[in-house]
Image (cartoon, rainbow, N blue to C red; front, side):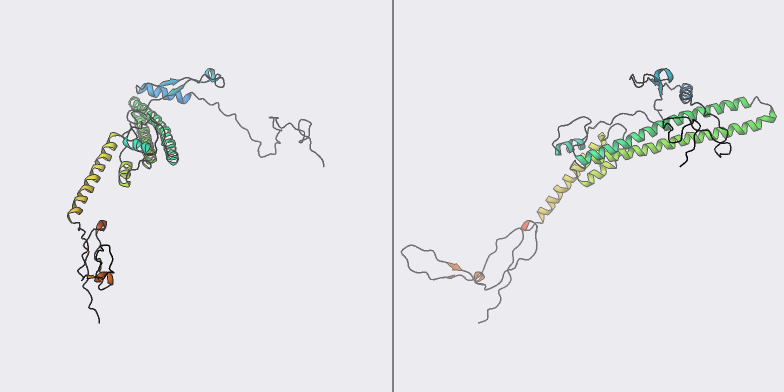
Length: 337
């Protein structure tokens, strides 16, 4: 089998697999077309624009230096430090860990005989899985919220530039003012839509946070031992952005427990007033004395009623709570002699 030589004089089977030089392409190949090198990526352009926008809106950015580790120490000379944009007051006031301080957490740990405290996960295995899933959803929502925060700042910065262009367009010649005014108005409308899109993204992130909070609440409530109606009421309560179970959750649980205890007490009082009393059955049959054999010892006379001999039937009519009720006997049936 003939082997076609390559441009290096070696066969295609003898070529070095680590050779990064491609063989020349013939002029008749469809892949032969003029190409331009890719432009260099400027990783600092976005950071610089974001910094100018923050300065324009009087927002202080925090610089985060590169980690001091031997794998990343070369980045300090080639890349600028990372700029962290704080959350805008209109998007999110502050982000922090949710403290676990509630009667729900206490009940779940008490039922599981767990002595853990602080931000420890639920004691149950399945509850820990639900809690971990809720934390992942919350982390995703936090990333989406920061992206929306940057988009809102840049969109507002863009709107400020178009407002400045509107002032500049007033000094143009009259034959160009109308067209310049149209371009400025279109740019302002686009900026407004960008701000609206950022707010919609923040609203979506907020709903995702509520989903994460519901998942984490369910992880603790399923081991608390509370009644289903109490658990459902706690799950549907709003999130106050400070605690997983806020003070209003504790107040609601205490109120529902008091209402339940009051209803039980009223029900017990009502049922005790109309509860039937148990009466010992009385047999009105004739009792006959059985003759006994004479003996030296004193014997007691034995009695036997018609009920014991099957003279008439007895019936228990009605069902009463706790086995209390009136025992009624049917009339004796006439004997056939």
